[in-house]
Amino acid sequence: MPYYLNFEVPGLPKTANKQLRSHWRDAHAESLVWHKEVWFATRGKLPQKPLKKAKLILTRVSARSPDSDGLVSSFKYVIDGLVKAGVLVDDGYSIIGMPEYRWEACERNKGKIRVIVISDEN
Image 1: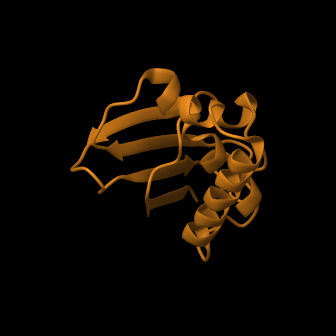
Image 2: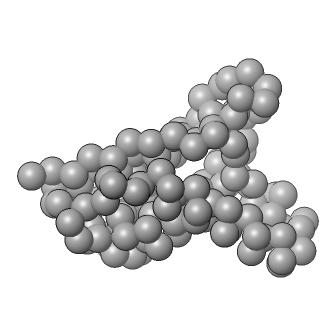
């Protein structure tokens, strides 16, 4: 039976450009925030065992279009959160390959992320 997970979280993770300008404690605090958000979003929706193979579709909905490395880097802590929550066994390339990253426009201060996980296993 296939596994499908779809959730949204209000707010936007920092991009690499913003993270590189901050102190390591701020980056750590940012990671904890997103690990917790993912944990809450996945409660009651976990696979029977962490997935060994999955496709990720990650969408950033924001007022400003990020550059490509900013878009990709902004999902680092979100993907780590999927591992910590028990959705994925690991975030290595052999498990998730190259996630599909998307961007959608929205009004200022209405930013959010959307995460979709698809797998043939459950």
